[in-house]
Image (cartoon, rainbow, N blue to C red; front, side, top):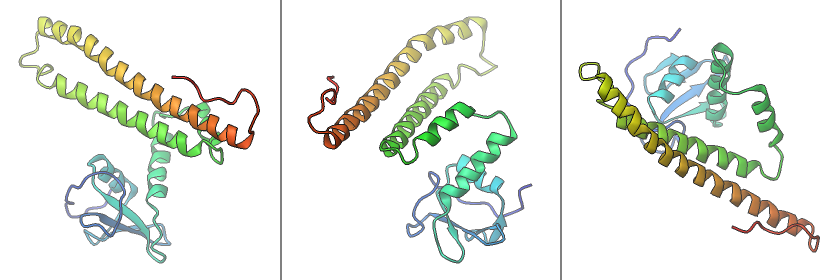
Length: 197
């Protein structure tokens, strides 16, 4: 599926500005082919997915217009993942996301989802760091495994408490902004007061 290409230098994070040094530029041609300017070769969506997984910074540009197509390509990768295996998004969740397009809270919802996903990723990273060595089959014993699992409960409680607090704060900010927008649209109407913290 993936075509042979020269090794790429690892960078940091998907997408970015092509004018910045170290940002890998991919060109999309009308025939739907992607061209990697760093390796001077054509690549596939599977190659782009691998760039995302290895946290390389890249931008996808239309070969003719130089329009930024990075988000479009990332959405194609998500679509392939959703249709090719066990989906991450339910139909109900996708419908709810679609309902926010064109809504006054569209920007806030994007920010809310992004912050929650980042917090979830941070929790996953911290758990992975704590489990390094504890799961080594050479030193793993039933007693050590029990200690590891018992130690995870307070850690998970602390991490989830932080996650829930951050999520609550973002939700309260959204609620406050909605109240301000409602007050501006309907001055003097009762019931449009910002929530008390």
